[in-house]
Length: 89
Image 1 (cartoon, rainbow, N blue to C red):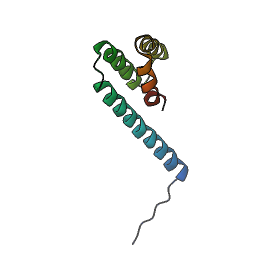
Image 2: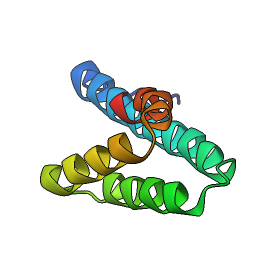
Image 3: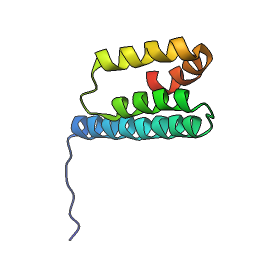
Image 4: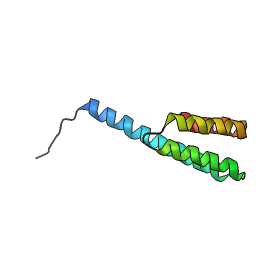
């Protein structure tokens, strides 16, 4: 006897969207990690690590992220422009 199950396609679709979003976030963090490893300026690397760690938190504080982005803007505008795609996705 073959068993068949009906599934709620709306729930499956929502689950797959959530899973894809989580996978994308991991990929973006990995790309940001790779970028940070290539940075030689220790002060800049510290700011980038602070930003990355704050973004990883489930309830990331916009105020801390904003201050860190502003600090990065003041230290190295080019670095900020390069990492924006990683954090905006």
